[in-house]
Length: 182
Image (cartoon, rainbow, N blue to C red; front, side, top):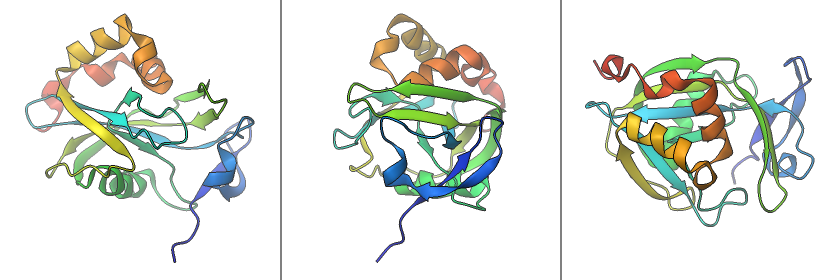
C-alpha cells in the first residue's frame, strides 16, 4: 500500500506552516502550497508539451508544459522533478535549472477546483525516451519554442493557466534554447 501524497502548506509570505494530503487540498478553497513546474527540451532545442489526461480531476484534457508536481515535505525540488518526470512521462531529465524561482499563481478550473501555488519554474533536458503514464498524460508533442510561445499568445484558453502566466512572467522559458542540451 502506498502512502498518501503530502503537500507543503505555506503562509502568505511563503513560509512553511504544515502539510496536508494532496487529495484533500485541491478544492474550491485550496490553501497556498508548494509546487513546481518543469519545461523539458530535447537535444535539438524543441520543447515538450503534454495534454493532461481526461481522467485528471483539474484541467482534464488541457495542453500544458511537460509536467508539474509537488515536492514532498523535506524533498528538494530537483528530487521531486526527477520523481515526477518518471511518474508522469516515464523518463529521466538532466541539466535541471531554475528559470523563475518566485513564480506564484492562483487559477480556478471549470469545475471550481482552485490551484493556489508558489511554483518555481524549471527547465530541463530529456535524458531518455518518453513513455507517458496514461493516467497523467493523454498526448504529447515536441514544438519549436517560438511556435509554442506564439500559440500561447494566440489561444491562451487552449492551454493551462499556469503556462499562460509563466510565458508572460518568464518569457526566457521559450528563449536561449541554444544553452539547453549543450
